Structure formats: structure tokens, C-alpha cells
Image (cartoon, rainbow, N blue to C red):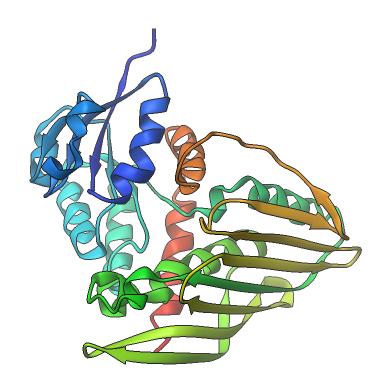
Length: 320
């Protein structure tokens, strides 16, 4: 029997909803510690045998193989800096920190100290986007000529005018850090390094916060592949995400319309539907991609996803 791999989850929201169900499903994974300042309210003792703690520093005194960080960027920065001494394997949420230059400095230290780390980029781990990457690399339909992305989504804290980190760019939130990071990461994953130009934004101001609610930008990638990205918030209802790629020989569309922005994608090649199944049954669709990430985490030996995220943060740093 394989030795159990001991995990610690830091975070009371997505750590519980997104990561916990995945770790419970995989047989040789053991959830040793769950760290949250509000562990009592989750009543986790009924669903896990993990130790429940409120101070994340206690994790580093335990026998833990992998730490999962699902916390606000300012706290994540502190955990990453603290871990430079202990060198625990880590899986992060994006953005890496709330400030690009801090993120760059920490990633450089992670690489220098050879700390195993990866970051959760939903679409880079999505079966459709992985399949699409293979099509592009093998030039199955010739070269990519151009692409466009339209993504409309619900930002609950913005709609409720709640003053949280999720609506503040300077704290690592806003639609730039939470949503545009995803898009720029998968654009580089598919097409090569990005360069933004002609960026237009629309803002709303509440409680002294300037919230970017609309982004329209043009992108240039390697081999002179041009793209357009449009992101905007909506009040409620169904969220929509569409990626259209024009090849020499065909048009591929990946699209979803769903309350869960990571679920129910379809792919069409010249209008013909293609199906790629991964039916896990998770309540939160992002857990599908987390399962893929975690299963491959211990096998990977590079910092590819960290670099994708860091490059996205660099571009976002120039959007005002």
C-alpha cells in the first residue's frame, strides 16, 4: 500500500468548497490539518478527521507534505514568505500576491530554493483547453490566424457593494486579478506570450473604491497572432464565456452558458459538436480542474503555471 500524502488546507471558503471534496476522493491522500480563523462555523468534525486550527503557522510544525493555500493574496504572501525557510510543497490560488513586484520576488526565491509549487489556473487544467493546445501545437487545422474572447460574469461583492478584497485591485482583487488573470494565462498557454495594447476600461466608484467593471483589450501573441478580449460584469443570472479561434482550415468555438462559470463548456469545430467527458460529480465545477492539478502536481518538475500567472500579473499591473 502506498504511503499516505499528508495535506493541509489553509482557507475557510474555496479551500473547503473547492479543494476538500477532491482530497477526500483520492485514496492515498490524507487531510491532516484544516486551517481557518472560523473553523467552528464549518462544523467540519462531522466530515473529516483532520485537526482544525486557526493559526496557519502551526501547520509548519506538523508532518505535512503539501500545503494548499486558498486565502486572500495579502495572507498568501505571508505564507509564501514564511515557507521559504521550511520549503514545504505548495499549491496556490491566483494572484500570487496582491502586487506584481512582490509576486516576482517570491517566485524567484521559490525557484532559487527549488521549492515545489504550482498554482490553480482553472482553464489551463480544463480538458477542452488541453485538447485545444494539442490541436494548435500539432497544427491539425493549420496556423491560428486570430481569436476573440467574450466573458460576462457575476461579481457578487460588487453587486452588493461590499468592501472586500475581492473588489479592490490594490488588494489583489477586482476583475483584473480574479478573471483577467485566468484569460491571459490561458492565452499564453495556447498562443504564446502576450502583449496588450488599446485597452479600454469602464469603472464604477463606491465606498471610495474604483472598481473596473468592463475591460476591452487587444492582444498580440508570438507569430503575430492577434486577439481581442472583452470582460464585463453582469447583475445576475447565467454567465457566458466564449473563445473563438480562426485557423487556416476551420473555426473552433469553446463556449459555456452556466451559473457555474467553470461548467458546461461545449466545443464546436466548424459547427460540429465535440464532446470530451470528465464526469466527477463535484458541486463546484472548479473542483474538476483541481483534481487534474493535484493528481499531476507531484509528477511535474517545472514552474510553467507559476510563470503563466506571473506574466499575467505583469500585464495587469499596467492597467489602470
